[in-house]
Length: 75
Image (tube, rainbow, N blue to C red; front, side):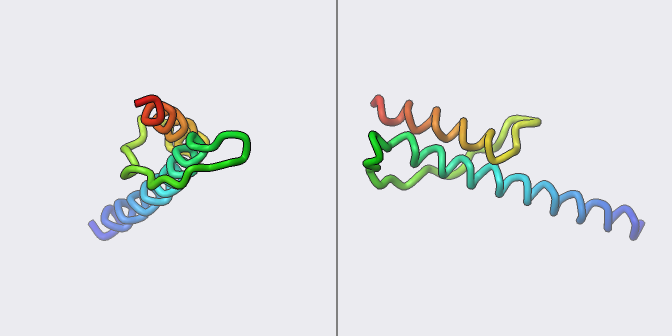
């Protein structure tokens, strides 16, 4: 039972680390969407969404943040 608990704790730590990379990418991508020719409008990104299964890397978060930022900018 202790081994099972240890494995669960270790896996949850890995999941949280993956989430933080995705969220950092999301924030950077969202902010990048508000830049034109090197001039950036300061924005506060929304709360990081839950990544799609398998899309948990920084680049995945950056792409989703960029798309969400462009969509917000069009409103």
